[in-house]
Image (cartoon, rainbow, N blue to C red; front, side):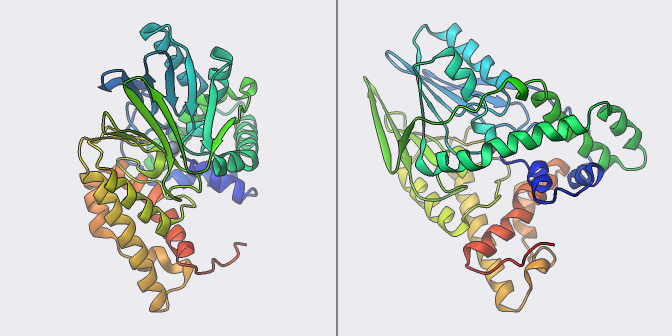
Amino acid sequence: MYDSFLRAYRMRQALLHVAVLLLFAPLTLAKQIYPGYTWSQPTDGIYLHSRADPLAGPVDGNSIVIVNEADVFVVDTHIDPAAARAVIGKIRQITDKPVSHVINTHWHDDHANGNHAYRQAFPEAKIVAHRATLASLETEWQPLEDQRQATYKSLAGRDLQAAAAAAEADDPDRAMGIRLFDGYRQALEPELPTMELVYPDLLFDDQLLFERGERTIVVSWLGRGNTEGDAVVWLPEEKMLITGDVLVAPIPFAFDSPMRDWIDTLGRIVELGAETIIPGHGPVQRDEEYLRQVVRLLESTVAAVDKAKTRGVAYVDLEQEVDLSELERLFTGGDAMHTYAWRSYFFSPGLKSAWISLGYPVPEED
Ligand SMILES: [Zn+2]
């Protein structure tokens, strides 16, 4: 995910740090912020490295290891290079076969920061992405990591955990916001100075097909989705789909997403008839229920925004005027952490994405 902290920071660079930290405000659950990662094995020869809590900071994408007859494919490389190195360590425990291909499903850095670790460990490996993903990485990635480093540097000497503890009694939401941010900082501050940006070097427009003995790996672009260049990885023998952030559980991310195209793309995913779906974040799905729930959410969001526009609601009033409370309950179950994620990662950016995808103009920000 393109995390909301830096997004806001980059767009409004004059904001004070404290004000930015408040963007994380409404969390009320006491959470362990960096609880680490877990391994699972969705099927024979396929391994999933996933955040134990997909909503805790740093929010990080799933990384999937596919062990073939003579080589290994990896899908997505994490935001934290240390997590990528952990995956590489695991691969070396499982097999002596080399990683031949690393796929970046899209440009967000929680799916690409680990590329450097793979280039160091497996210099021959090709890094695969859609052509639009490379274009976005070339324009967005360096400024994003520069901004992250500058932010951490400007906070040097500030004990964020102490600041969080001090805020706890009067403003527990703010305390949680600081702790969430500190989860990113703890993971990335030691890593970014030596992390090189390693860009994809095997590009595709529509599809790449890899035959690996009994396994076929199809890397496809099914249309614009969460970003311009979302790659999905389809294993027809296993009926398994690895989606990147076209599908994220338990709450979709909707930053700058072409939402009407995204609905069509998810429709093509439904048609594949996958029996196992590994989303970009969150747990493995063994049926299409969640996928269909997300389709319904996006359709309802676009329809509600369009209806609001038709009855004269201004862009700036969308969050007050658009009611998705029934779907909010379905996705959050009333859980405080889920509700925070709903508001920050879906509702607020999603209304904007829906508005833009309907062709309506967004007023200039001050
Ligand atoms: Zn992501």
